[in-house]
Length: 512
Image (cartoon, rainbow, N blue to C red):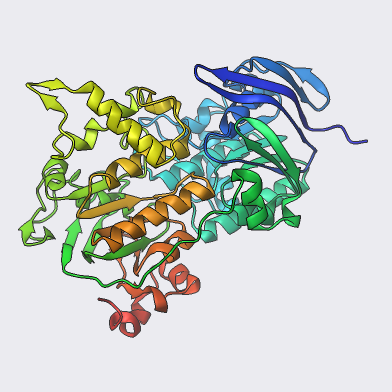
């Protein structure tokens, strides 16, 4: 019989207040693409970190190619043929792409690593400039760096934690070709994803975790999305109720916004025209790194260099207003980067409320300069309960939450502010099917209550599910809007390459 590439037996890991993994056993064969499925907080990422040596288990046994080993750190994992792409990236912002990759490939020179990056990027369609500093990259581009870095180690076991969460459908197709090729060459792959259709297409085995325990093993190709959902969360996700929208006056109006990039690796914005009305959800699709970051910074107020008169909220010119003043006018914002911009990692969930809610009339925080901690924690506890966030209470540090649970908390924090305009980037990045349905339902509920919502996402299925109109951004230019009824995946995919000029006349009448 073939010896398993990876065999886990009785893996247990506990943290204060929570058991992340409880007596978990798992077997992965050579060349097998094996899914690990579970809702947010089920223990998937902890288990992967144990395999990769970045977390030490309290009990259990790990065998690689039949040999019991103790993996004390990621360096030892790589020496044993294990590579991992994390959901939250392990990159140094001030270093270039090539320098970050070089850290894990110390036997090669920087020049050799740079050439290898170019070769892998070209081979697998994961284009990236090795000379770019990481802080200039979008989240999707950072993900490409992590994937390329893992591939360059020629792994026998490749662990992928939500690898397609911010990739376009075209990029996902290319990645699947890569993974299937690796599998055919004998590389085993552990694949974590909340996208059930991906798991059913790609994987031939699946282990399901719930509450840190194994609750099922199956062949996902013999299952349906509904049956996988039942295995994962005990139920099927609720269907979104989508009422016909009646849009009102424009809450935000962007007219002729052109903005030079702040750094040499950014993207210039060219003559952006956009408006979002109360009672509608407007979506922006596009390949990562085509100006989304620059546009969102301009809209949120993080970049106040916009030409005067180019951005209005109602009748007020907000082009040069900082984020605090825009929040006072009802603009709330969910960034794509959860840790560092959406939340301070070391602060509690309660204190992270203070980032955007200090002057809310319904939730006063200060009395004579003092923070009302009990009131703050009570409000955080209500959000944790309402949005089903798995956390060790309102005093839990943001960094202690799984990515999906932190996303639910941040989205809940901004929705709870009763915004007039909510701008959300990658709203369901890394969240399970049940939580994704909840967040999308909350977005539609906001729209139905008269809020204007702008959603920037690289997941087309998500945009088609919640949006009333769609734009596409490519090379810093924004397409005309197209009503959802006239949009197709094929058309939007073509527009992602900037090929909308020839269609503009046809859809212009549909732009509101």
